[in-house]
Length: 122
Image (cartoon, rainbow, N blue to C red):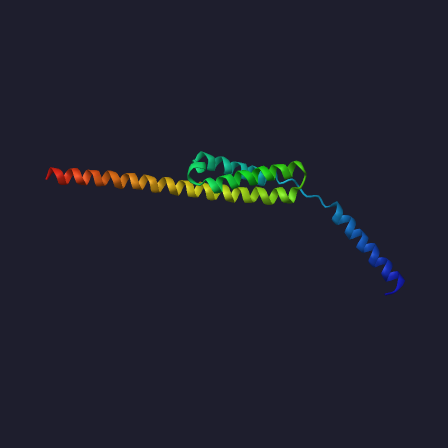
């Protein structure tokens, strides 16, 4: 490589490194807000009772995301907040499923009681 071409190459390379070093990672406030909302929704659905493992995992990841935000580890915070949101959504879905199954079982039990009462009266 010629000296002039080499100096241009290193100048461009240095400029690229400087620009990439100045690239700013934005705090993942939107992801953190969505994670918090999902955990709150799961909590309101009694996920601690019906899907405790998933709910606790979501809470822990949300706390770790908040810690990462405080430490300005924005990439880590973003990933953890997104994982917390998904885990909370899973906890919510499992809690709602368990509640629906419980309600269906109670309805079936009531149907069985009514059936027996009808049969006894015949």
